[in-house]
Image 1 (cartoon, each protein chain N blue to C red):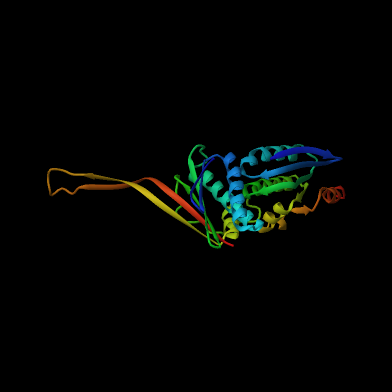
Image 2: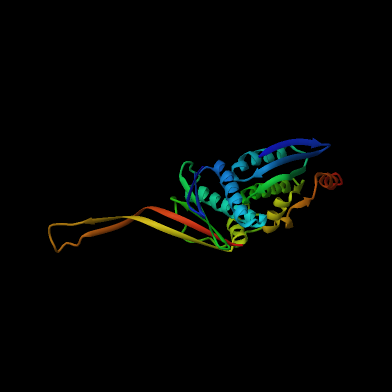
Amino acid sequence: MILHERKHNDIDIIELSGRFIMADTPEVRIRLTSLIKGGGGKLIIDLEKVTFIDSSACAVLISAFKNMQIKSGHLVLVTSPVVQSLIELTRLHTIFEISPNLASALDALESK
Amino acid sequence: MTANKSAPDIITLKIVSDPQNVSLLGEAISALCLYATKNEKCAQDIQLAVIEALNNVILHAYKNQVGNDIIVQWRQTTGCLSVEITDFGVSMKSIPPGSFPEFEAENGRGWWIINACVDEYYYKVVEFIERERVCTPSPKDEAFDAISVTSSKNTLTLIKHF
């Protein structure tokens, strides 16, 4: 899995690509925790290039969601079809704000 | 990872319990399923169920200890694929219910996913026991007989029809 961080105005963006499974979760969890702690309360997790995801990766996303809630911030996920499929299977689409691409995620957060 | 083809439609893969090995095995299983079914959704579902099962083995049967054997046997019969995942760690007392956890719970979705991705699954435990008997010269004394489980072989079988 490859992980990139960048910033767009006051919005933090973390982009993941490849397979996101249990072996990758410690690194992603640390990076997200640090980004949320030091960030301005607007975060996009871009999973558009993720080709496979499992429940342990979902656990990391839920942890990020909860940490962002504590900070009263906003988190938006950008999903690929594979990610969207698992998120719907696990019914997490009911708690996450999800955008189909980065542009719409940026639009959603810029208005907040 | 090592592979062995023992019969025309049976392939055995072996890894050691390290999360780094799970992805490669998952991809191998997906490729075999895609080859057998020509159905991407079916291959994706089985891969997901197998990866969830392997995660459970590493976390719960082997308590995150690296270096223990996990054997995965892929089998094809007419219209049916099965994958057996065998470990030699701590056995489950029963299969956890595939019920849905609290929405914000971080864990507990693995069995829900397995339940959703395959048509049938079952779990078999073979226990290897040590039996101890103590005999005394007096025939009136009862022999002490103790049985303890020294190790076990645990196999989760996942079945998907196509």
